[in-house]
Length: 137
Length: 137
Length: 79
Length: 79
Image 1 (cartoon, rainbow over the protein chains, first blue to last red):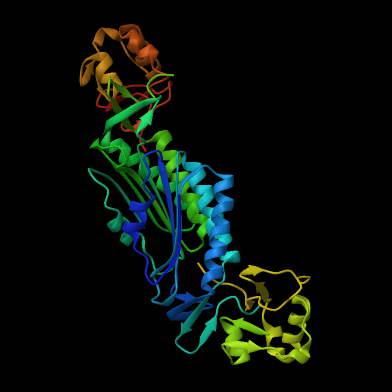
Image 2: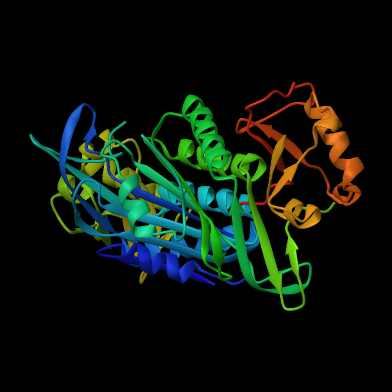
């Protein structure tokens, strides 16, 4: 079973309760947030923009790849869109598997591929200006 | 910073909020629970017993090893003791790091070593009898 | 031909949607990329950009036709 | 000499704490393990067991003395 969505806010207790499965001995949750500085400057706010239908399709594809490689009971990928404060959770990846190593490996694959392929863009607001992350070499 | 403890019940929102750190871009949480069957039989209840002071010492040692190997901003290891129902979280490992791969690797090390070395014993109550897990070959 | 824009490409091009004139005679992803770089040289400062056709990443060889949903994707930075 | 018991070893030995008589002349972890196996043969059915001295795992060569906290640890199964 999988749950893939774009939301304005991440609800962790809901995430954990959805991931529970009677045959899963381990749940791995990866929660990404944004650090308070980048390039030596202070980030004051953030905005995530997505190409929503394609982002969902890419997340579905990545999830399908993971479910082919690892015996996953439950898989969750949730990303936020919109304005966020530093420290807010912006992405959560969750996998429930019978054996814990599968959960670690699958979650790592899911977050790595999400960062590589899912069309979502982060804009960082520094005290002096704004920057679209990754845009420049 | 690290938090290591034995508790009667795991509180996940508290765990997550303790793990937040302004310089951490990623938090990996591993949550272990007990499956509803083992050896083809149905587990109805569980009990965890610990050699408490030594369990804490072992967890502290494992945590110190991990903090030497990976740049960890926050590290948490919490294990329950006492009676539990199938599906209840029984152990939670959490790491907050600047870079996500460190969090995945450190969490995996922590749970693997906890399962190897920390003096805690699980008793499974089946419908027909009880078994101390791992006791027999 | 209309191209959906996201992130920094909206700022560089100054539009939400890029209208590519028929005279540009775009037939493939490759020719679209070349036209974009010629028309908006600042796009060349990006580390890279991709084209999506019907919500999937498209290779340079992909031919473009009517009724496709085409998007210009600057380097992603989710997560 | 008193040995703290945990898990299945409490059930096999039938006590919370195992009293080892002075006559057993236990001087090392190795001799303690041998005495336990001789006195409670069912302990030999365990896949293994460890001895902790002062809350640390002890090797077979470790010498035992007065005032140490000694514990018998069946195979752990936390997590």
